[in-house]
Amino acid sequence: MRLSPMFVIGACLVLLWCLIAAAAPLLATHDPYTIDFEAILQAPNPDHWFGTDNVGRDIYSRVVYGARLALYIGLLGVIAPMVIGMAIGLLAGYFGGWVDAVAMRLLDITVPFPFFVLVLAIVAVLGPGIENYFIALALVGWVGYARLARAEAIVLRQAEFVLAERTMGFSHAHILLRHVLPNALSPIVVYVMTDVTLVILFGAALGFLGMGVSPPAAEWGVMIAEGQTYISSAWWISFFPGLAMVLIGVGFALIGDGLARMLRIER
Image 1 (cartoon, helix red, strand yellow):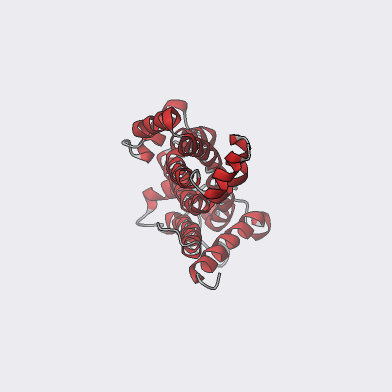
Image 2: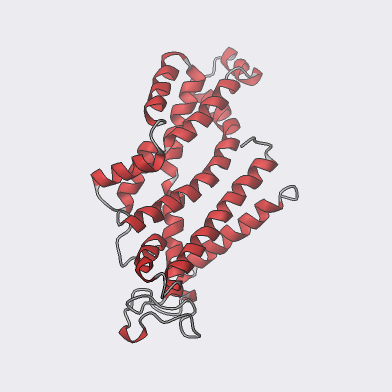
């Protein structure tokens, strides 16, 4: 950790947001869903620290509760793509042959299309909602993990300890799970940190477009969308959730960069 102060800064930022999300009921000064027509579009003041929106809801409280959704989307959204991608990549790199050929053809089909466009298309077909966003991520987001896992598995299958295991008669499953997978995890963990940021941003983008979390949920993308009409007169509606999104994204990005430096991984 001494080698990478960026990792420490990123970890502190992410830990801070985790604490905010966990203690949201204690930190919030108002109910994030309570409508107050007497407090519509109030600028930041001692009673409403981040101001209020177009129906009088407290922006600060909504940003605090929005941290829960952001972390939920970001952390849960990378699990399925990571598991699918690692499984495909490790099998393709370790066995080679027709297994690798099939995996590469799947990659060739997916890679030419922009990631967000594919996610958007799948969500449009399935319908708006977090669950459908997770399904879209699972169908599209595995590609990066598969590439990394495949590259590591190709190198590791020729390693002396793997060849020794084969000579001793251990099964392929044992070698993959006990030796190849643990040694291939380092670059994948670094990639996960970057991917969490993208998943949070894309989730907010879907919320902004009306295809993610539905209003009146305290979700940062939805809040930014609600504030775009009032951007010239009530800038705080979009500014504070946007700032929160930047800070949590920077936190995960710095963790990924710090891990890459500590593990000497080229990015």
